Amino acid sequence: MSDQDDDIILSELSDDDLVAQMFDDLYDGLREEIEEGVNILLERGWQPYDILTKALVGGMTIVGNDFRDGILFVPEVLLAANAMKGGMAILKPLLVETGAPRMGKMVIGTVKGDIHDIGKNLVSMMMEGAGFEVVDLGINNAVDKYLDALEAEQPDILGMSALLTTTMPYMKVVIDTMKEKGIREDYIVLVGGAPLNEEFGRAIGADAYCRDAAVAVETAKAFVARKHNRIAARA
Ligand code: B1M
Image (cartoon, rainbow, N blue to C red; front, side):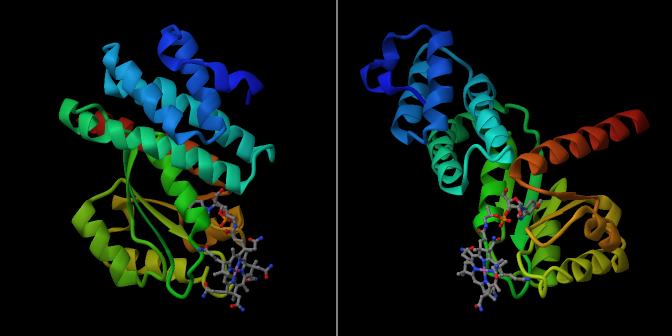
């Protein structure tokens, strides 16, 4: 974001300035700088979870908002997501070690007959950036592939993506099969993709349609919080 970024020595910045600089570097998709920033914060004794939430997720929230508002575009967001992944790769093993709380878990895949995956990948990256564990099934997923993954992974959320008007009805096949098997209510079902809209999401029995990756993250957070509150109320 700044022309002066070249002159900045990350290790000489105060914690607050370093985090602010990492927001800028994430926005600019500078993976090496993000990795360096994460390592410096770790050396300074920051907890991995604090680095994730305060430096990386904080920065990615700005990217997500500007993407939603049409200020950033797909190539820039992919670069930012790549930089974020660099930081995440350092933190991931440490987060598992320290048992830091996770936001939740999502299984996601593009539906049968559809090979578009750029949007789905963005959603996966943004969800990971927001602290969710994501199991990405890739493209062209038949109903059995989704159901097997639900059983094996026991996620909070099933996410489905479709970019073609000819493939989006397949989402209903998956949801109807979940109903037949009596497992529909066990999962939060979120759907997305350019040809979908809220009305379609409602009509096929999804919990929510997500217009973009930023909305997917916010929707997932809201539904998982609601689920946890329900479980707590029952206990
Ligand atoms: Co295709 N394609 N394509 N294509 N392609 C579209 C979708 C199309 C609208 C282009 C057009 O004609 N204007 C059109 C569909 C028309 C229709 O159905 N009415 C189309 C067509 C026709 C086709 C083929 C049939 C072309 C052909 O072969 N004759 C063919 C189909 C192949 C198949 O799937 N079986 C095809 C192939 C391809 C490529 C392989 C060349 C390539 C895909 C590469 C890839 O994905 N790896 C491609 C591309 C790139 C596009 C366009 C140009 C761009 C899609 C994209 O990546 N957008 C697209 C035109 C367009 O959409 N303007 C088009 C950027 C991405 C970030 O946005 O995917 O919408 P999006 O994801 C967003 C949200 O939708 C949401 O969040 C994302 C991030 O913000 N979201 C979710 C998406 N999934 C979500 C899941 C969630 C939540 C949110 O779950 C929780």
